[in-house]
Image (cartoon, rainbow, N blue to C red; front, side, top):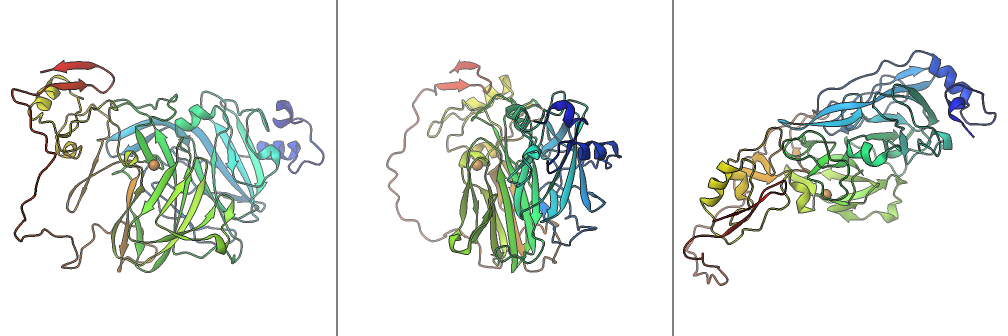
Length: 464
Ligand SMILES: [Cu+2]
């Protein structure tokens, strides 16, 4: 049994894959310089400066952690710490993450690489890192209490193992999981194959991101950590639309998307305009006979999915979670349904009294995207984003796949909105309209409207 004292530099254990003595010797050497990231914009892929070559991934609104090569071992330094994450322009959340951001940086290695990861804990409580999906010595699995003691605040632990199988993985704490993952502690891991693999295609672009969920009250900064299901922010890499960068491809390129789910519910991820094939999971590459065309893939809690397609259709293609509540941002959940009720004028008067009052529009909720509502400081609008044809009325887990004929290979810059060829956009019918029998229309009650008002946060008023 590895006791805490042994792990921190006590006796060696004969027969262990990585002995405690080896760990302590390494720990005495200088730590790799920690690399920090403050920006939330998608960073260019990190071409490997040493080791076996591979085509690097692009982390959506994220980055890849540089390493130090030392005696043939790739050394990384993760810092677990509080971070400020800009989740959307003008909206900052106080999260926990790694190396300045939530999620932490993506770690990219090659099958067969020997990897040493230093984890420094700058949180106020213990933590650990679990390497989800990896084959490794049991004592490197990062489960506090079961395979190691928690890393105390201020201390650094060392994880060391061989990246044995290629594929798509993630990392996250196995210490106070409910709090630490609700606060944003997670990161992506990609192990590239060391040679051509019969089940792993070479692709032109390889995107990855993690699904996350937060519960941050309008006007506040820190997530509620006790929330189990009723989250109000649905994020890709701790970003919410319109804060999520577009995914860009040159027409005809083969594109891979790698997605992991660390929320508390499933997410059917849907791509417009193309069919993809699920080529792998966190369990490894899918056998060819198990692959089928899809346009939506449901990603359950704790799962990862790898999708591939040829980006052969030019345009701006929506790419989003198909749960309609997950393409919206923070809102008061007690909003009553007002469809069919004429409350013009009333909402405006209430909003002068209660600045963060929200009410559903009479024709649906799209009205809210056009209402100029006063929001409390540091609040993401519930549905936002301007497109070339007006308000998108989206939030949360939504982005755009931008396929362009003239996008240079390896260029990830946003090409702007699609320039549709003449005659290829849905258009208004200008002929004579037939008489439409409007059955079911509810007439407005005469003499005023009775409105049940529920203020976000629970306050309840009755207005005439
Ligand atoms: Cu979803």
